[in-house]
Amino acid sequence: MSNLPNLSHGRHTLAIPGPSVMPERVLQAMHRPAPNIYTGELIDLTYSLIPDLKAVAKTSGHVAMYIGNGHAAWEASLANVLAEGDKVLVPGAAQFSIGWADTARRRGLVVEQLDFGRRAPIDPQAVEDALRADSGHQIKAVLVVQVDTASSAKSDLAAIRKAMDAAGHPALMIVDSIACLGCDDMQMDAWGVDIVITGSQKGLMVPPGMCFVFFNDKAAAVRQKMGRVSAYWDWHSRANPEGYYQISCGTAPTHHLYGLRTALDMIVHEEGLDNVLARHATLARALWAACDAWGQGGPLELNVTDPAARSHAVTALRIGAPHGTALRNWLIEQAGLTLGIGLGMATEDDPMSDGFFRIGHMGHVNLHMLMGTLGSIDAGLKALDIPHGDGALAAAAQVCAGK
Ligand SMILES: *Cc1c(COP(=O)(O)O)cnc(C)c1O
Figure 1 (cartoon, rainbow, N blue to C red):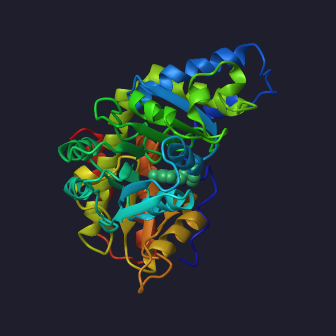
Figure 2 (figure 1 turned 30 degrees about the vertical axis):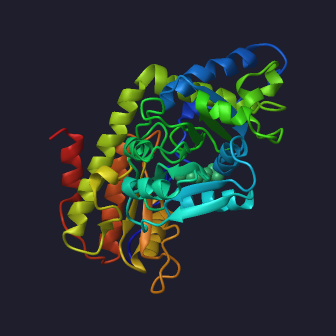
């Protein structure tokens, strides 16, 4: 490698699972002086976002917008329907289930957690069993992470809803779709999800800083019976504002709103949600095909074995320590490509998760970008003498060619 020039100069690519690549148009829509927040364009623009956000979640329910990241959405989802001392079931123990469960505990909730390891989706039967065992209906809500961004395992929300119904349990179903809304399908109403949360910086292609809580009438009724809900988190006034300022409980996130308007134009009105989802599905299949080919001759392996349980937004890979970190570093320094770190995958043999990396393929990603990422990884495997099978790019190209 000594006589190899540095090949990283050129447009740097960020392929991490959020923040995702933002369209130039979204950035340009945000590049403007501060708008009036009392009358005028911004008011109409904000209200115009509501039906389009609901279209992405496939719900006719309500949506509340917050200035905050995904962690804020975690707080908001809990604050409106759960009081101190209430019990919640968290099926899952990968990084983001752990984070949400921790948020719940620190709000004074009692958490029962189910562990399916760090490679598998939620087992609906285990949810049903846990709810059946709760004959006194102490559990008030089930906190489901649709795609755990650390493991990239995607859970079957319709099956989990069925399991909850089979147990005859009244708990609310609350879903964290922060990693994947707009990438993996979400059918909030059809699947019977009571509350869905997401953030602006992943599938929605806007900078981090806004989050959204969708809720149905059942959840709204639970909120109405709450003894008290803190002013900032209360979704009622945000979703049913008497004045514009109530939508954001103070100064609106002005520039994010412009960016979001453009992003939703692109997703809902130009490309169309069906195509957006199909594009993500196809690019994900191409990525998996490449990984399978590499894995034929070396240690690289998809973290989630069952294709039906893999996200279309993010992919976690195992390659053995220290190869994951070495490959990521080589790609930054030599290819102008940043991949995601292994998150929450530490073991005794690999305390820094050096044997893992993740690829974000969410939002504003096309065939050319994915093939660039795969081609760069292929070069990195060769440069670092990490054993790998041949034909990864050809396998991905076959999928992208529709063969
Ligand atoms: C990114 C993410 C979060 C956290 O979002 P922040 O904006 O970093 O607070 C929570 N849950 C999931 C599934 C995520 O992908």
